[in-house]
Length: 292
Image (cartoon, rainbow, N blue to C red; front, side):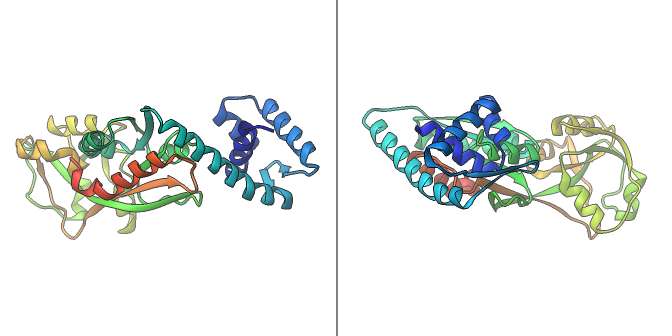
C-alpha cells in the first residue's frame, strides 16, 4: 500500500467508476484494478461492489474511505508544510463558459495575480457541461457555468447575473422596441452557447424563430450582428464596447428579459493545499468587485 493507491481508491469512490478513475490518473484500467485487488487482499475485505453501473462502496469500503480521507489530508498537509520551507510555484486551473472566460474574469485574475504571485493560473473555455466534467475528474479547481449544476458531486452558488440583450447593427432599420410576437419577423444569428435564452423563450411558449444560422462563437455572432446580417442575443458584458462605440444598439423586447445567472462551482470535498484554498476564497470574496 502507498499514497498513490490510497488516492486512487478515493478517486474510484468519488467517481463511482474504475475506468473513469483510471482515465483521470492516465493509467490503464487493468493496472488500477490490480492495485485495488492487491490492497483488498491485504485488508482481507472487498472495498467495492462492481457492476455494469460502476463501482459502489461495500461496508468495509465506507470505513476505509473515512480513514483514507484523513490519511490523505494529513499527508497533503505535511507536503504543504515542507513546501513552505522554500518558495514554490502553485497552480490553479479555472474552467468557465465563454462569456465569463473572455469578458469577465481577465480583470479578476489580474488582481488575483498581484496578491498571489507564486500561482500559475490557467483559464480554460468551455460549455457548462464541459466545465462540470473537467471539475469532476479534477482537471479543474473551480468553474463558472450558466445556472446551478444539477450534479450532486459539485457545489454551486450564484456569483453574479448578466443581462442578455437583443441587439442589431446601428445601421439596421428596425423599431426602437418590439414585442415577443414580433421577434419571428426578424432574422436572427443564434448562439447555442446561450442556453438561458432558449430557456426563457420556452417559458413563454413556442415561437417559430427566423434563425439564419447557428454559431458556436459569441465573437462570431457579434461580428455578424455588427455587419448587419441579423439580430442577435448577446450578453451585456460582451457588447459594452460596441454599444459605447455605436456599432450595436439594443432592441428591447416588451415584457421579456433574459438574465444569465453565473454560478461558481467546485467539487465537493476536493483535496487541495491551504494556499489554493486561500486563493479560491479570495476569488469568491473579490469577484463581483473585480469583473471586467
